[in-house]
Amino acid sequence: MRGSLESTGPATVSAAVSAALTATVIAALATLLSACTAPPQPPPASTLQVPADWRTRVGPSAPIEAAWWTAFGDPALNALVDRALAGNGDLRVARSRMEEFQARLRIAQAARYPTLDLSVSPSRARSLSALGVDRELTVYQAGVQAAYEVDVWGRIARLTEAAFADAEARQAAADAAALSVAASAASGYLTLRGQDAQLALAQATLETRQRSLDFARRQFETGYSSRLEWLQAQSEYRATAETIPQLQRAIQQQENALSILIGANPGPIPRGPALGDIRMPPLPDGLPSELLRRRPDIFQAERAVVAADASLRAARDQLLPSLRLTATAGVQGFTLDQLLNNPFTLWSIGGSVLAPLFEGGRLRAQTEVSAAVRDQAVFAYESTVRNAFSESNNGLVAVERLREQEVQVAERRAAAAEALRIAVNRQRNGYASYLEALDAQRTLNTAEVSLLQIRTNLLTAEVDLYRAMGGGWTAPGR
Image (cartoon, rainbow, N blue to C red; front, side, top):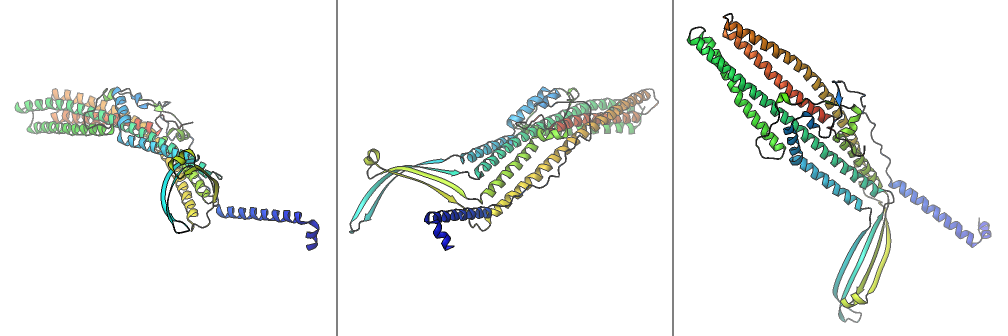
């Protein structure tokens, strides 16, 4: 070995040693980076299955407009929803949170640029010289300092990506809140119109009961009927009169709830057409797969997964060394005049590499936390999608069954009306008692109330279906 070294000469030995040292440094750096990095943490396997179609198909359908509530053809309903979207308190909070996360995004984006700081520092001090003589010295300094972190591993880019996804999620949350508020306003208004119709029916029924009561009184006073029939007529009249204040109370409570929903004080709500004149809108169309881009809550959950995954990658990058560059430039003088006219020039340029060596497992634990948060976001996304499928199917089933029920109740009402006509004729001709006609009146009134309730439920089921199908919302960029 010694003979070999002597034959190559000093230059060859130096090159060999340098190459060996370089290889050693590279190997050490590779070992350090491998020790710093965390193993990949893949997301959990998806268990989500998107059905090809709905369980129930209900008649023809049409595309959903953005202002879907206008399909009911009620100007008062349109105005109420517009007021709710402008003044609802919860919706204003959601929009404020959206603005908050947009500001957080700008904070994350600022990390990609260098920072500049200006400093001006006059100072005065008293010190002792080597000979023991004290002296006072004034120093004026002014300078600019720049710092920049080189995004070697992409950590800052991933944090920016996470902030951008969070901002998109908050935007979708605000849109989901707007959809919920619009649906709540529409459902509340339609419920109110249903209560108005029931009140009108109760008042008309009370007038009928009053005529029956007067007739029963005359029959009793003239001896053509018993006291039982007279008392039964009084009971039916009072029972009908009792429902009127109950309905009036429910109407006022519904008005107050709608007033709070639109951001106003409790008060009356303007009305439009009667319940029977409100148009039944066409059913919204679409397949289950289209819900993935038509519901804001699904898009919000999706963006939450993207943000959590980007945060996980940024957390893993914290285990790697970081490179930071700094530069300062300034001037110094012992008087203010010297600082302004003939100062000393000061400058420095440097860089630093910071690598975590021992954190007690904190950084790795933080990576595990981020991985768990990402997995939770994935599970939440799947649950949100399944819930959307369920709500849409339930809405379609509700519309279908309520339509069938409406047909049956309408036929029952027609039969009850005919039975009442026959009972009244029989009573007038002396073939039936007043109680028989009264029972027919009661049956007809029950059928009419049921028909109003069914129509109200059908209209509100349409609203629920619009909300379940996304209400015309479309994910940005799709």
